[in-house]
Amino acid sequence: MITNKSEADVLSGFVVPFIKDGTITTTWGSKTQTRQALELRIFQTETPFAPKAGIDIETFVKGRRNRYNTLASKAEKLLSQSKTRVFVVMPIQGDEAGGQEEQRVFKEYDERFSAIEQVLRGVGCVAIRIDKEQPLDGMVERIKTEIKRSAFVIADLTDERQSCYYELGYADGLGTPVICVASQESVLHPGTPTEVHFDIHRRVLLFVNHKQLKSKLKAAFEKNKTVLLADREEAQQLDLPD
Image (cartoon, rainbow, N blue to C red; front, side, top):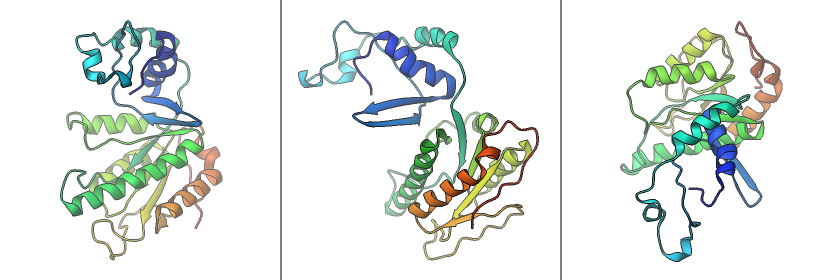
């Protein structure tokens, strides 16, 4: 929730980036973050929103029209080049509101994505993931669209999910560079080593914790950034660190 911005600030700072690449950038103090956004709702009010007044935001904007469509039309005219998008292939497992085991699995993959997102943000890229909470209608086509729009792909092959292999194969067929990662230990079966049974002609970056995942991803990006960020017509082999 972002409040008390002028129309010009909302248009240039939020609507244009959202239309352009599905992201918004927020700044709190000295910390700036760019994240994937799923929806924008924009309401114009006569007075600024004041949390200390004891009125919640839903009550404050009740009955007001969402002005997103109006501002989106203006944003379309201002669009220029997009940020570098990176599609993240990852098992969608666990349940934030489920039992203890489901929560553990959900938390692990959520934190794993945050680690990947942090690395990509540090090199000027935006991590894109098809979240499990999105409607299933058109999911496959949406995944294909996002992979086509991405400069490269990061694929987590832990626990051998068929959907992950499908997305990896689709990216490979397009000639999109893919960095494959997997934890040395299974998420679903702790204590069991990860096995990656797939004829991928590339090394998989194995990691034992999120710190090592970030370290290996940074090294892989720095070693291959010319290939990862280049315009391409055919697949190129990545040189991945051990």
